[in-house]
Length: 182
Image (cartoon, rainbow, N blue to C red; front, side, top):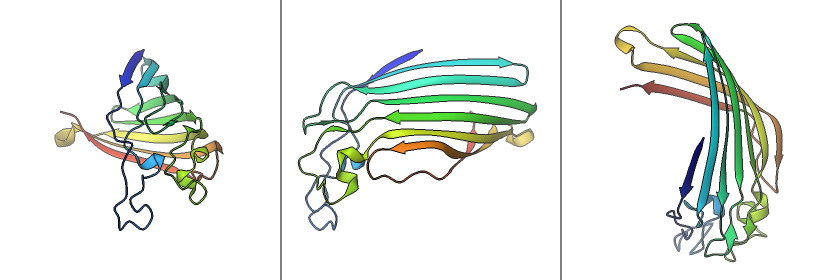
């Protein structure tokens, strides 16, 4: 189990320059601000099981914003559910199957400087929704001179999406990484 908190350190007042075509001297939309402007509670829980070549894990993590910020809006609570199984075929290669769900609500309140009728990114009702995706992946641990290296790749597709307002739906996801352990 884990619990954390985030204090409002990121700005919610970032603006475009006077010669900015989209936001001349206006505040950027909610998703372009580096902060939320509120204290965030970050609870989570994870369970992991491993036996021989088989491993399984499930986790739930959330973000709960406790207050409206000084501008007058509050980002919604978020919940992420993640469960995966993996099988190690040989000492150097494994495969995985993962199910991931993300759930969040709409923004509460409004930034009065936003052009909500002209652009979907400035509309607080065009944020949030429900997404569930399935992912298949593989990981390769090298031997010899590259023993501290690992190459991983994962491909995913959404199996359910219900988004609020005007938002782009996801078609697929590719995650790839090269890790070095020291």
